[in-house]
Image (cartoon, rainbow, N blue to C red; front, side, top):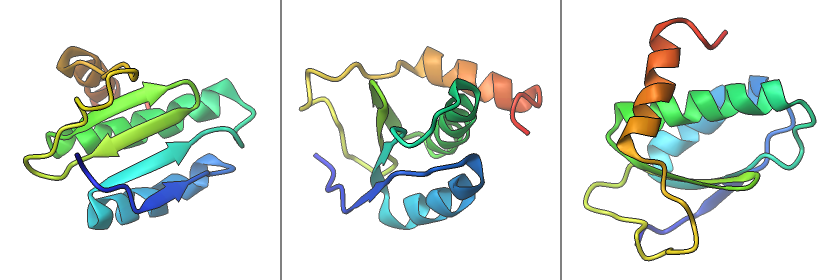
Length: 104
């Protein structure tokens, strides 16, 4: 199971770029969306981070307002059975949205 060393709780979409940079360094992160009041803004943040995960062949789980993301090679989050893992198809849907310019 990956080691989650950082927890991020962005208050606005503009913070997601820095979160993604740290994610690429840390390989596994937790992101809480509890400070985001707009569903549209939360979706944009999720889209951006899921796109990063997809591009690196990572794994992603979403549990309410919390995302668990990992791009650590050979790691698996399957040891957390209570969390619904996003399927490759679901991640691909996010990727398609990115490709169509669905994120600004």
